[in-house]
Amino acid sequence: LGGSISRALAQMSNATVIDEKVLNDCLNEISRALLQADVQFKMVRDMQANIKRIVNLEALAAGTNKRRIMQQAVFTELCNMLDPGKPSFTPKKGKPSVVMFVGLQGSGKTTTCSKYAYYHQKKGFKPALVCADTFRAGAFDQLKQNATKAKIPFYGSYMESDPVKIAVEGVERFKKENCDLIIVDTSGRHKQEAALFEEMRQVSEATKPDLVIFVMDSSIGQAAFDQAQAFKQSVSVGAVIITKMDGHAKGGGALSAVAATKSPVIFIGTGEHIDDFEVFDVKPFVSRLLGMGDWSGFMDKIHEVIPTDQQPDLLQKLSEGSFSLRLMYEQFQNLLKMGPIGQVFSMLPGFSAELMPKGHEKESQAKIKRYMTMMDSMTDAELDSTNPKLMTESRIIRIARGSGRPVRDVMDMLEEYKRLAKIWGKMKGLKLQKKGDMSAL
Ligand code: GDP
Ligand code: MG
Image 1 (tube, helix red, strand yellow):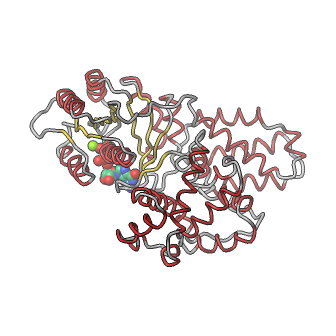
Image 2 (cartoon, rainbow, N blue to C red):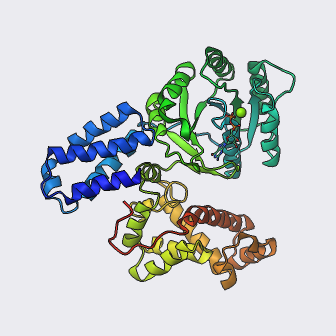
Image 3 (cartoon, rainbow, N blue to C red):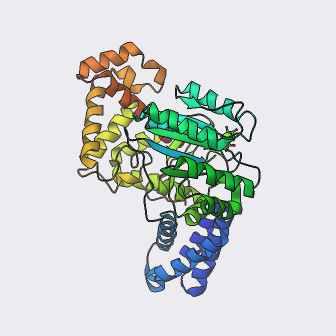
């Protein structure tokens, strides 16, 4: 996929005369690749038309880097298509919210419910899980197992066969227990059937969810649009989660799900473990969709953001898969030196959505400084280690004392490190590129 797009762009780049035909050929090639990535036919056609409208043929012909101009246009267009223009409901701590999960059987609802609960628990919420799947044998056991492991309260029944009754009982119980995030897992069926949608409508009507999340398997292919639309027609879907992004699928169906539900993608599932869950970040997602790898933007920006003398060292270490606390410290230093945080670093994976939410730059900066103060109390061995097991309780307490911060803050900082190490760790084995060499695309 990436190959055919880069080939198309390279051909365009080499053409001495850029005319309508060259542009069309290039767009056709890109479209073919997007179709292979499961982007819906109609959306590909719309994108093509939009690009033709935006890209100025004369500017393209004169531009020194035609490849870059086209890449940028396609990239921006796909990002826009993933933005439904309104944010989804977000739960607030201390205020009871009900969130209902819907999706076909096997899409990953039960797994994703647990991940979603766990994610919010780490943020200080009091989540609870309700199993309203009475269709599949073993559904309750699966939820129970996940919930127990994560120490999250759960509700369900082996006997009761009415999903509406269980959902209502569970929601009521957890409201009484002052849970602020009550998550209702529902049943799926192998196929889209009237009975399933009727059941979803009833559960939704009875529990009055603040948010309905549609869970979609990234490998669903061209069926994504119809499936998402069918759910949207029976319940008011307000957000989308795409699962199994750790597999081969590029996740082009996400564009369909957004279009069909007019709701944003909020998270992606990246594995079977409860931790394999990431806040959806549109740029790396689109990079992957275009077969650019998550890293072309990264490589690009590394050259702009990281001081030249540090680049070889950083890339070397990342390619060896060793993202140490010291490396994180150095990136924080670079970040703070740049003055107003934003724009540039927002391209670096992991640094945008979570560490530096838009509009909270000041707080983010203060947090990063706090992290650095704590790291100043670490030994060289601790800073250079990539083994999280090294950070024993006694070391954590020592660092907290040394930096005059609560233990919780040190734990926070280590969590952040783990998160970034996981993301940046994917750079392992990357081929080092010289400055200006954008052959990744
Ligand atoms: P449900 O029927 O919609 O509740 O789906 P489940 O939560 O039971 O998930 C179906 C299968 O997909 C299980 O084997 C899960 O472990 C697996 N699964 C769910 N999410 C992911 C993911 O993000 N990545 C991978 N690799 N597997 C997943
Ligand atoms: Mg399930």
